[in-house]
Length: 399
Image (cartoon, rainbow, N blue to C red; front, side, top):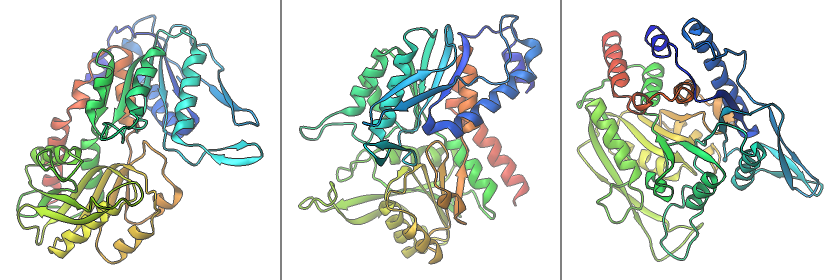
């Protein structure tokens, strides 16, 4: 902490820190708060005299529901002059409310509306409002291919119109969505270091060189016409470069004459790259929705005699449940599944023997801590040095 303490010597924050984890993000918010409380108590001796250390930085709020399903947001503590950070998980379907006598699960629209309610309840009193929305609302619809709505772009504009200065998200489906609000703060964070660290800490016998290990992307790159997803390719290139490993690529061949469940069904996954025989492979993507694409790729890799298959995604939605993942694990088609805790995780998922929970609470706390003092977060956004240190340590003690 020595370097961290010196960095904050006599620093003056933008405003008194306030963290508002909405109900959808309460557990993560509490973990973030605990980190910040501990750090600030450790460096209390070097803080500016006007900067007060607290036992908690959480601002209490609630969203009350009427029997009709309508709601109102209420802020229960003073927020005047505060630098507010609102955390929301729009994918948390575990929360229910009564709607005309029936229990209704909250949808992304409900969570987004609650976020706006708390922002409007603030009524211009805070010094600054920042939103941390790990899964960016409606970000899967990021461009028009027909006469379609662009809900994510509209939402970003709406939030900034309500007074939000900065929006922080993780692994945006397409980072170009920030062009909807080019003059406002927007950061899409890649948890690359956390994934690598989690894999190294939880798996033995990894040989991090081109002869044993490869990074595989389940989607095609920007130059492949038949695949709509260019995000996974860029992500895989980054992992490949920082780890110094070979890279392969799958692209999806689709049947464009049919539409099933709102999309053209995948006919086959075609592979481009060198042989994966006898190698461990790391499939990396931004999200696992149904998991169909990831599992198909895992099966194809096993057909090509890959050794162990590790599946990683920032967001584990698992919209079709875990049954198929269980079957693939039992058949030896996948070895581990890694997703983060920035969105809701079911108890069933956390109990699976193949699941690795990638905790990002400390990472989020670091960003909030620095931004509150208006310090640069460039080092946090580019974790190459930390990744290299983790690799050096692993190679030294896991020969």
